[in-house]
Length: 156
Image 1 (tube, rainbow, N blue to C red):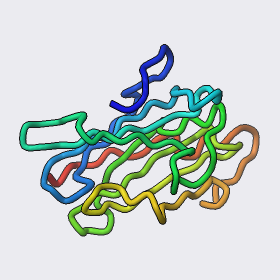
Image 2 (cartoon, rainbow, N blue to C red; image 1 turned 90 degrees about the horizontal axis):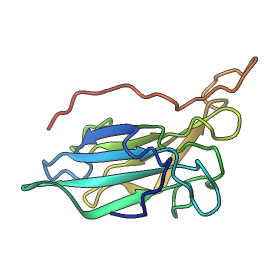
Image 3 (cartoon, helix red, strand yellow; image 1 turned 180 degrees about the horizontal axis):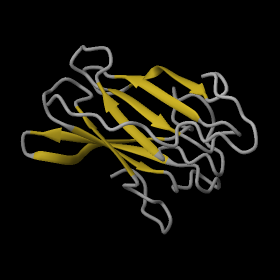
Image 4 (cartoon, helix red, strand yellow; image 1 turned 30 degrees about the vertical axis):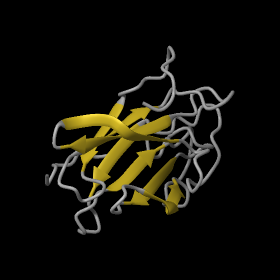
């Protein structure tokens, strides 16, 4: 498993299930929005656990933060990256895309997406959209865009 468990990580606060690499085994994306990234507390991380013929495995597990190469942005304290996680094959190519919410990003939140590929999420070329860019208007408080994502039925 990538990383080290600490008090307050909130590992497992969000879960997404889907086949990110098209091997017909369910992978699990685990959110830990309380994970510290360097000195940035509550920056957050998402960990992808791979599915296999023997079941879920930590072999080949990968962690993603906003400091991961190819992931837009920079990990900052309070971002809560991976407060919400979702895996869904939106492109209908047999590989689930990764969607991760960071509701504490700036004052309006953020959604990060990465396309599925034969090797798993394609971080290079991944995209991010903020609440403001998505058209959400801030009035009295923070927007928290990306704080919740819909559940989805698995096609595996």
